[in-house]
Image (cartoon, rainbow, N blue to C red; front, side, top):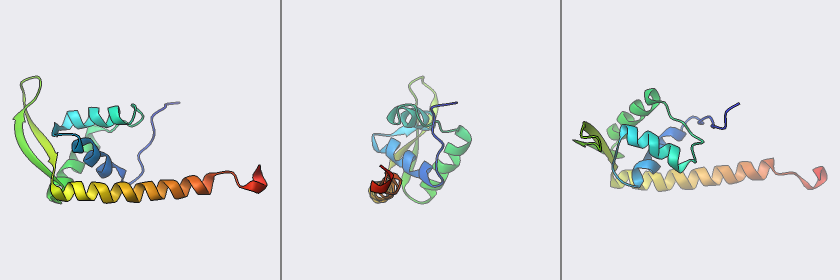
Length: 113
């Protein structure tokens, strides 16, 4: 059994926005950052990441530009736009409300204790 959690539908975009909110990153850097900020509990496959990045750029939430990576290779770097920062805030608040409601629903009830 693995300690890695499965992503819920719709959470990949939020995780990408969060990773990039800490500074511009290329695709592989985003994968590493999501692993880092999740304590290695979340592993994103490249096959899921790149369509997500494309979608977020198309929606105007990320801006992409070419640059040079740490290992001196040409790479596309992604950074948050103003709209992306706003969406990250909205989605984070929504996620936290949902997680709180689920935690409350799953908590032992007085008659169960």
